[in-house]
Image 1: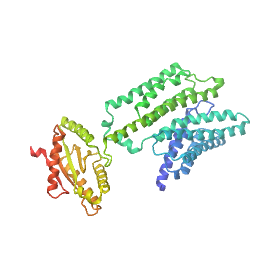
Image 2: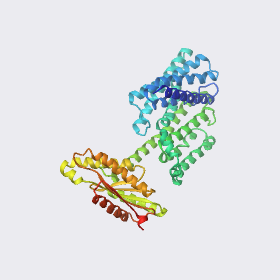
Image 3: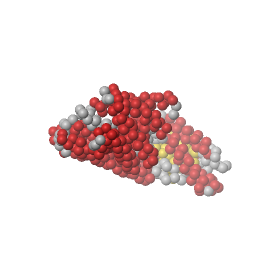
Image 4: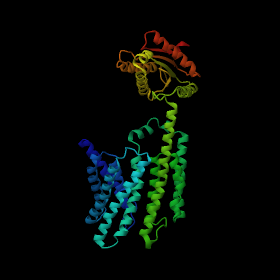
Length: 469
């Protein structure tokens, strides 16, 4: 990591932690520590998503931001240093525990990582609570046990609320694609309804909780949160669970939910935090399980639809999906190009070099085809050494250019086949207004492909059906 990058990241961490710490201080009840203190968890989450080499610098910068926030709001110097040293003890323990358990990926999505988050959170909270208990014992001579329990559950609550958000957040490129030029495609009416309905149900619980009050107020959002967990991503679920949890903690700390008995404020505060922890973990667990089920379903679908050797669509899957694509283009009266591709001299390669080499050639060509057509169209293996491609919304020239890229890339790979030209012959059928039947287009492309074979192989022959009319 170069110095300029380090400076930029350090500045961002300082500002982020400072702002969050100031917000936590502003929201705390008079005479008590903050009801909801996410700064430690945010600092740990940021460091877990960055290289290990950045951890010492990040810890120092985060500690400076925490200290600045306390001093800026009038906290005594000694108290500010002691409390923020305790904060850093917890964050450092979390980092060490995470490294011992195995590094987290850039984005968590599996059950084992949620278990690791829980273990890291418990260890970080316990060490910070122990340090706080020691401080209390040294200053006051008693109350260490109460301080340990109170600090432990306060920290554990914020870690379990905040870390799932930071560790499941999508990378910036994903966000840019989602909210970029294709935002209209991503935000279809049905998809928007799936998100907004459970969100509306969750928001409706806010005024109800203030009216109901008592322990029931904390349980009101559970059905809505579980509904969200089954409809949206782990990241979105974590955000919603965190939003509700933070609101509940702040309202409870201010006495607006009437959860706490002033005589037993600490025990009630611990009970409230335990309730919030359980409430926040439940939808996150459901979201993780739902995500795992969706990934398993997608993998099963991929296995069912894809050719095992080449990774392209199977014959049936290609025909089905390309016909759906053709129907869409036909209805919209838009263009489509269909290609038939056949590997040259493949039988000779199989007979002379063996089936393992032949399979290797097919696998390599499948990779080339997928890489070249990614985002541009469908590609499938129809059988043997014969493949097909369907590309929508392209001009005749663009269709030829795509076919040429496939041919040239395969030609470059074929030079490594011992004495045999594993090139590809391609036939292209393009029409400006898609016809209704895929079979007809495939037949025309197949005829063009055989013409390429007759003219010497390793060629592209294209037919413009608009000009042929």
